[in-house]
Length: 473
Ligand code: AMP
Ligand code: MG
Image (cartoon, rainbow, N blue to C red; front, side, top):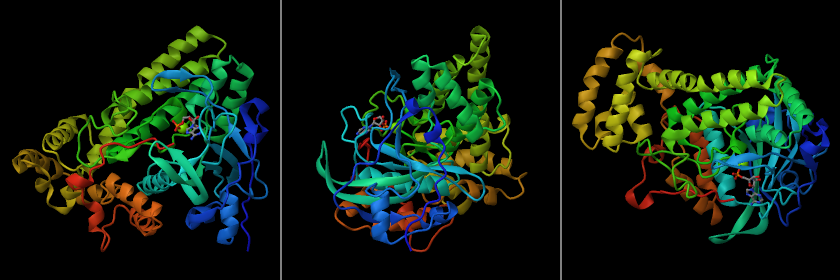
């Protein structure tokens, strides 16, 4: 049987200035290294022979029905505005609509230069492709909205980066859309109101059918992003590059670059080598997403007939966002300590634990999981710090029905620990994909302890610590 993708494309029918139609640039010797059969089945995709799929997902032979294009967008990168970014190393192959009516993009990342590549080569190397594959699938299994990985191929070509020549690769990823805050900014920066209006109409039909007005859209995106970032905070995830071009309108996590899950808890944790000032540090993510929503609001103002009134209303909506994030944060962290419906009164209990964890170099994931499974005090340099907190906690959870069950559903056993991700990449570069497959398998069921996988719960030894992650573009 040969690969069949039931394309049903919509973005390509938007005005020409939204994108550039172009085919992916062929690669020398594509080889399929991963295919997500479960996701493919949900998408109505019929898989083909590996050779066939390597040709399709490398872009060498786009599947029938594809309408490849590179999307135009703009964005604030580390606070500075670039009016012209766009898919510089990605092509949207097209979209499918699932049996449940969900429209999904299929995009190839690393598919060669486009008119938006600027100085870049349009390519990706194997490391970031496998990192995004594993982290996005882990995020999905954690129940957090995210782009997903459909397939990965190696290209048989070398990619040159600071560290030298590296094996090239391409990721086929799937998302509800790749429309970003920066897509709205692209048209707003050009004062292209008809373009902005067409984008607005496409977006509400696609993502927020209950929305009628730009104000409704802003409110919906703010709520989706408030939930998303609170969710990230509840699993110790640091995105690393929360630029407005990496912030989706759908509320999905996208563009896994120098991202990481924290081992030892500290609110100031930063991994990205390019984030020297900690703009995108763990605890700053709620502030940054509010700033990003203010940029979306600014772009949407151009659609309003009474712009002064719109500025007032949109400003209010943005100013209300921190409370929304906090409300989601409180519920999520409440569940992490066994409270099915935490209230403001419970907040000191939560922050008290986090402070003790930070002071005692406690592992984020293992400490929370140990609250239900035992051994939490051993996570603290000074176990007495836990004992002091525990007394108040025990008293509080007496009134809960089944706190252990609530905690086991909120606190994963497994996260993609950075040192394991780096070890997996090193093995793959040397030709061994077994650690990659193993990580994928274990992380697909992160809340259930699995036989023979306890090594994946272990924080890094001093020699294994990965203190920096790289965009690796
Ligand atoms: P990022 O912050 O990695 O999502 O990328 C920011 C911008 O740089 C986007 O427009 C990307 O398409 C572009 N870009 C990143 N890496 C490359 C590359 N290797 N070649 C061309 N463009 C790139
Ligand atoms: Mg990006």
